[in-house]
Length: 117
Image 1 (cartoon, rainbow, N blue to C red):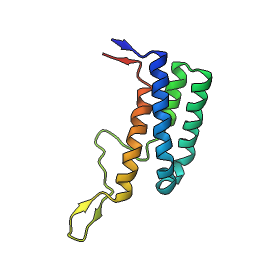
Image 2: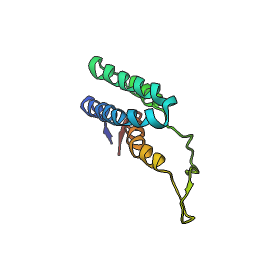
Image 3: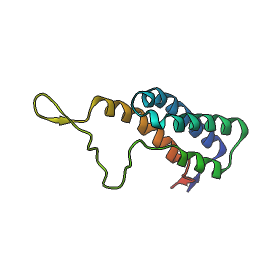
Image 4: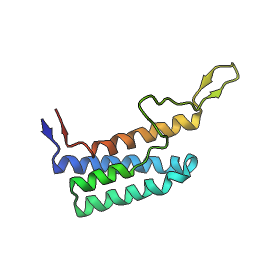
């Protein structure tokens, strides 16, 4: 089993910070109610990078990064628009948001993991 090192964690925090930076302008357009939480996560990430961290700090940061949707095991997007031809698709705003949201959620999730097999 590989346990994440401090160097790994620093890289993971930097990835999270960069991903959050890409998410903020999109969140501002589509989900302004989550914007404060994303900006706080950027600030916390910078603080941890500067001042050091424990696993509890990383786990707490990870849990503080919200998803936009209440996803669960059987969740699927029900946000669909009907096109002129009668077919259904996810709206452009949803696709744009998901493109930047998923890397944030993945990076945040990594901080809760201690390592891998």
